[in-house]
Length: 497
Image 1 (cartoon, rainbow, N blue to C red):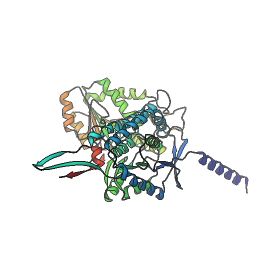
Image 2: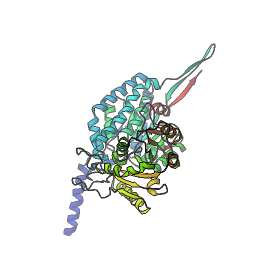
Image 3: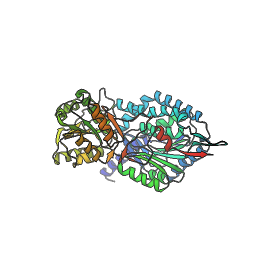
Image 4: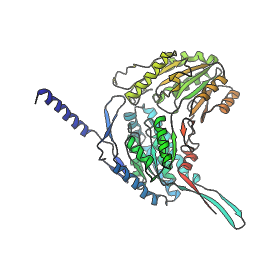
């Protein structure tokens, strides 16, 4: 054997040892953490360093069947528990999550890349859903009517059975907490698939469920990509599927799930607009827009990605760019970091390509964050805050969801033009207006075609008691996430006379 071959084998052996030393994310099936027998694994890399954090298994068909079987058996008893017992578990779970905030946030930073403050916010917004499920006694109430002198009719809510949740990478704690607490509180059991890019937070949540005494099989966690999705959307034991993510995957999941007779709710892409009128509070508007556009590195479905500047508000772009330029791009655990890395190198390259398309199509790059250097993290997937000005509706940077720290500015002359622009966009997650005029705010609120509207609020995500109400091409299904809508999604009515 040649020296070159010996060296190659030594390197392969060293790599093999390193892979064995790496942690492998486990499954959570029937109340037990199990090492998958999978032959295929997906590497999870720290977006700031490219270090491999863990390896995620492509759950085998046998293991997927075991998870569904465990959930099916557990449902027989879990559905019989009193609503007060399930309420108690939600109270215990919210307490456990609150006391595990730092552990969850650090997991999110290492796997997803968020700065620590954003990671804590990720957990907190999910925690609010769990807290709201402590109100399950009110949500589950039916109605009663005396329909004749000797006859009553009443309704009651019943759980569906086994349900599934398929989660995205951008909110590793919040989105799972949109799903399984509502499912469990209403008496269902759940098979959850966190994103294969950052499953750590979901695994911590599974452990907390076990610690607070949620019975075996009520929550199961599996991993993987296409094969796992196909199982969850096709297996007859699963009655409903919840999904949050991109357009392509969402359309596929919705169509496949509904074709197999399942309920499905799917939150897809977005292009959220903020209309800025010249009478707006300039300080408040600019500060709000910078935070909403560049926080979480722009990787959120309610990120503010388009600023529609009406009339003289167009003169504010220079100051907007100056504020964005002062944001600190750094690793998520670094003090005072404002913008962390993007999730993968591919996501970064896609965003950079869309920025370049803006310049090629005639827009102006007022602030170009491409090529930003972070000394401590030279391998990080960093894109600095980027502002595109004088974009047009036909441009690729406007039409596509960039999903990065990029703000596209469009200039119009009137509020009517602004409304026409917003309403002409295919997405309908959210929209905001910045103005001091009550009449303008009321006109915008009444005429804008978006499911969530902010009046001088840049990211109008509703609190859990209201539900998340994106519409148009941003949502597939007819029953939204969490709150009363979420309870309706996970239950069916029975009418008794």
